[in-house]
Image 1: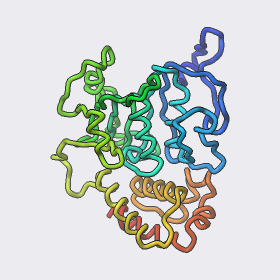
Image 2 (image 1 turned 30 degrees about the vertical axis):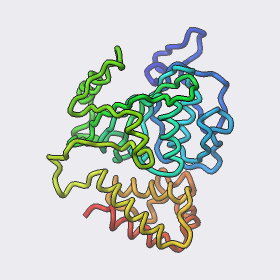
Image 3 (image 1 turned 45 degrees about the vertical axis):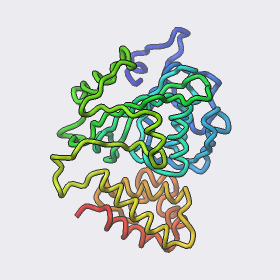
Image 4 (image 1 turned 60 degrees about the vertical axis):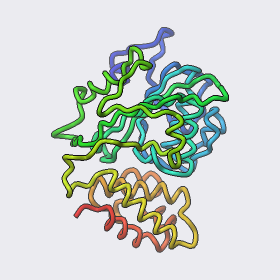
Length: 310
């Protein structure tokens, strides 16, 4: 898109195809598209954010979680039979609550035909593992839109860094061949590319789509894998929830996930880090202390112990 802007490439009516706006705040004109590609920012939280489903015809799932709101927005932007690809944090594949509702909607209302599992250290400013969801908006029907989901595992036994060993085009060549863009209905399973039927998927707990089948044979015991850290975080969260008189709110959970991601990225998290991006845009340390109260120091200490680097 930046290349289009710099080289003054415009659409047929003379308008630039590049615009700067916050699509989660301002309703757009009722324009829809045949294709939407999106790599949205992760973990944004803004209490002023409009609920997408209330004005854009999304899945009907109200949320203030930007990771989910972008998925609903993309769905709303698609014409019938339109195609989409969106990068999401890996937690979108397995979290419960509204995230589970979004996964169910993608399987039933859309044709969620492909997921690309990406490893850690692929994108700037975050070390977390991610995934790319490929889905089509299909005509309304009583039958589920997804018949089968193909998952490509580019994560297991793959180790990248953002500087010395960054993800490059050649690392994606096998995925492109397996995806078979000329006719994606003619695909073949490989070691890293597997097919799962709709019937298999709906039997999984909470529509969990974080599916792996490869053995991490070259994983060093000392390495902190995303799967291991997610398990540690989930275990800590369950223990914490059971000991609290009131469960964490959705807003608190979003902050906890962002704290987790920062610890995974930097190895530790301290109170002054709330005044860094992205927390500073949501009130920083003052907002964190208001949200968690006297629990905040204990929460940070425990999460650093559970997730921090040795």
